[in-house]
Length: 206
Image (cartoon, rainbow, N blue to C red):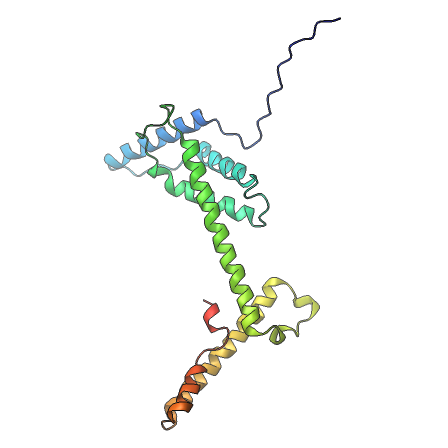
């Protein structure tokens, strides 16, 4: 029998979003130190190097493909939010903070920044979805049912919703004007008018 060769398992290939933590951390530390020196000497802070920006993008892209986030339809917005947050937070990176290995770990720091950026985007999108649902429920879907087939896109529908809400605002102004010009009403009638002060969509649009 031929002796079986002890073959080493193939190393998993590194994807396009791979970031070398040692090189990335060194670049971040160097940039932070340079900006701090420029600030102390009264010079204008220099821009973030392209390499660091590319690493931000790779970190966010890689995180967006994790099981926690890969199925969201607005994943690109999540990535852009994360990159923006990383750029804003780079000067908050503490280059003197000790780590478990004794070496700077910028990858972990900016991955956490991206994680929370994702959560904020998810919360924002959920809030917008809830508002749209309330618009339809409070405005009565019957008021918006007379749409042509070409007008059934999300943007067209929301524009019609906003137009409908504007009409409610105009009605409110008429009620206010009428209340000022007319004599004082009995208490019960005045209460009824106050209940009509807001259209059904008034509280759900900016």
